[in-house]
Image (cartoon, rainbow, N blue to C red; front, side, top):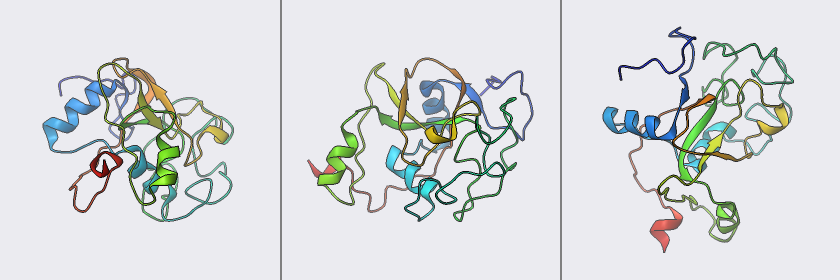
Length: 179
């Protein structure tokens, strides 16, 4: 894309960070990928479990780069910690990850009413977007699979990156498509 947003960390083993939601969306559009919806991200993080973390009920020092499990000296290589049962690395800590959704505090309340429906909230303008996973300075308690936060989409954040997905949209139901 002609930029090195993670500078001064110019190492190919590190995740891309310090990018805005709009930069991530542009990258995904140009590569045929997509940002995951918030529900897709959480499903991947949980790795088929209903536990607090993708590894179980607690996050150990050898499983994540976050404030109370590691020395938060900065980003670590994407494969520094063991993968979840879905084969995904660093779903907790290291860099927080942008999701496709606009942030709506009530999105998951609606999901409780519509079971098995992705509560996707279409983003608009410069309204906040969903960020998941926490970064290297985030306490483990805020790196839970279900913990949600938001950021302004036009601003690159040091500890925020993204995890693009190949989204085939096969059989996907969203709250928007159900209306």
